[in-house]
Image (cartoon, protein in one colour):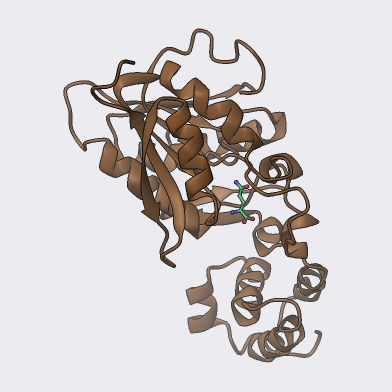
Amino acid sequence: MTGMTVAEALRDAAVRLAAGSDTARLDAEVLMGHALGCGRSDMVLRHMRDAAPEGFGALVERRMRHEPVAYIVGEQEFFGLSLRVTPDTLIPRGDSETIVEAALSAVPASGPVPARVLDCGTGTGALLLAVLSARPGARGIGIDRSPGALLVAADNAARLGLSDRGAMLLRDWTQAGWADGLGLFDLVLANPPYVEVDANLAPDVRAFEPAGALFAGPDGLDDYRILLPQLPGLLTPDGVAVIEIGHTQAEAVTAIAMEAGMAAQLHLDLAGRPRALALSRQSGGAG
Ligand code: GLN
């Protein structure tokens, strides 16, 4: 890309990336901002006529091989928070903000007792840290079975000044006794693995994101079958669990929740697709 201005290199990269990405221009701008060490708006306002930086071409090459932009630049915005991401963590999706919205509607902004929050499979810490940042009275725990992800989650908590209210613990909900000593929670969050093992996934996802955060058996429901029956034992009597689901899974996961003695309320994502279930104990039931 030597000899090109930033504007020219962006045009050139957007054309080359268009074959493999439907956000080619945006990808090029984010990568250029990273190469320049400035934000996208600063780049557009001040740097378009500068010489394109040396390292930009290599970043575009990585993207051409389907590496997600978030891994190349090492960060992703989620619910207005800038989060560090690595290949040890799933990249937080805009769709998952639906879980945060549903959770915040379940946890009053002020209350007599600060809410206790548990995030199962916290990854980058996205769900937990978004809720804690929006609810300054709340405290929480993020668990993950991936030590690499936990390091990222703890780092994100520290960067956001939330370490004193958000602890990250190495736990695996498929192992008996994993929740011993954690107590009860007003809110449980989870974006568990829910993809069918042989699903037709984009190469950006299948070749780069952690399999352990994505796949959950032939029908994608293995983790719901293990985790949901444990929720009544983790929730306070009025507690709510808000869990992410695949957009075709609302019926199947609702059935698993009902079998575990919980009622499910469906929440849609911004595209109007099923994305979250808010689960609570069935009131008036025998227990
Ligand atoms: N939403 C992700 C995807 O479609 C899957 C996330 C998950 O399994 N929890 O790639």
